[in-house]
Length: 476
Image 1 (cartoon, rainbow, N blue to C red):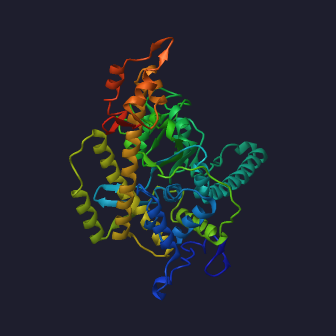
Image 2 (spheres, rainbow, N blue to C red; image 1 turned 60 degrees about the vertical axis):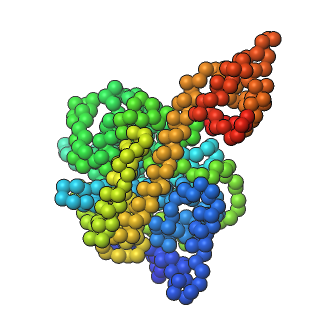
Image 3 (spheres, one colour; image 1 turned 30 degrees about the horizontal axis):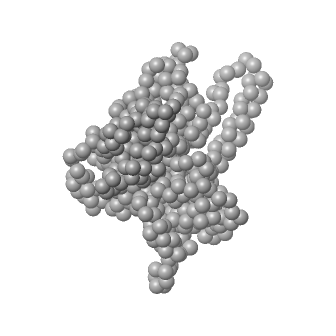
């Protein structure tokens, strides 16, 4: 890899803290218009529902990367912005923590769900965001294979000392296919942290309780909180994680969102811990021949590798950050002025968990900014707190949208087959007369339902909205 500032080869030692500054860093001083700022303003204007991922929370060098990939590969801004946040979280692990006050420290682990339709680049966007970590994992696997060859060679040459040396352990950051036992075993061997990285999170959910009936969801609740985990292996050996740091990232389709709330997950706090990335704009990915600027691509790789190099993989020791005084005052004032009355119980639960996430977001953002700017800092500043609160607003909006989607789909499933058929046959908007003609059509010489029954059906506010006298719109 090349240090893009100096065009020199980067070694493991020399590349720490080095990243390419924004190509537009001097524009404001020169009084010229910043192209990236224009792009962001355009994207905000284009989004009619106004919940675009707030990429302004990142340094300009990272904003440039997101805009470049969005323009050249057409990946949604939300997928890229959230994917980079998750990749940064997985890179940091528990090498750093944020001390809120004495006895209260937060790690940076995130449980993130990328939501969308088939063909909208969920997989491709995540592949880009996690590619630098995959590069590191390839290097770790090559090292592991070499160590294994040496280990086996040593054992075969010195049979009397067989097994006296420790068998090499595969170091890793990501885990995709595993049993609950393998998850704990891998984490115990990789104390810095593990990120579950799967393409389809619905398969991950279906594996809950597949191997045992001990309540796997509850285990993930503990892992999210970072509390100690003890497990008894089939071999008879027990494993204990004193200070776990587990992240989750993957995608799902809108049509299967309801599965996330099944088996008590909508009431036991599991759903509230999920960060849903839900773009407003849904469109099929179109191929093009545009090439990504390799400089920007390498900049992103360098950022993630630098974040990995901030800590030691083989230790439980974390670098503990505190908050600058004005940052802490700003955060506590914001939290103390949050609503305490909610119409739905799930709104309260989402609010509380996302407030905790604000602390995690703030530390991630601080480390990204410090790494890009090559700063040596051990405090979170007010700009990182403000960026974290923007993320709170973004994810809160999405969480409520997902809950509404789940409730709507679950309610639809309670309808009779006849009710579903009539609902599906009705156009998006219709008059009472048009609806009666469709709903009350003759089947074997008899109307499916009477006029009175259909008019009663129209009063269901979960399914229909009255636009004007005699005019209705479906809400599902």
